[in-house]
Length: 313
Image: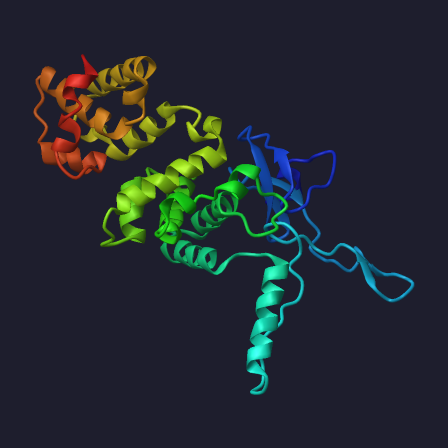
């Protein structure tokens, strides 16, 4: 994207700096993508960023380096790393390497596993990048200057222990997919990241609930549930099987219900499926339950028919 399309700020931002995004209106974190700073939430390109560090580092009178080099993801610069080499004194070198990692901060071994899972399961490179940025917010590195107190005191993985690693990956992949405009279903990400794990949904939900608290209730509530409902309806493509007038009735009923009942608003997928079957039948149309399940990405008719009494049409 050319420079003319970048949004300018009065002062130069650096990776890890927080700012108010002009596009998503959220308190966001600047992340570096190539040589451009982006909003970590909506990926709005903010500023060009000079990644060369030679003009920001100088030597003092005694030959020591001072100043700052290029920004690094997740807070302060990581510095050099002691690596184990040679065949002698292996134990001593491993101990020094461990001390070096501890002093530098950075991602823990468990978080690195979660990052690897995100990279493996993400649908696209952009999906991967947004999910990793969310992981940094919910599971901050040791010493990360941009971490919130909420995340430091109780990171997202903790309520899902001992399945904090895959649960965190599932949550970040789900939220990232949603932010990118995909019709994301959390249960599917839980199954992808924790196949065959007993009570996997419970672990995933605890982690998701904690991440919602870290992100803040205003962002967590998704600005408007109508946006999610629109995505679900778009994927269902009901125009192929029902007239446009019937689709308009379904949309109108969803609007009415979402304004009057917070619980129904929080479950747009089964509620919309129930509305589809009920209203279509009322208007003289018969749609096979299997067709409705396929279009709304639901496992069986029982997953939406339980809402029939609650929609109160």
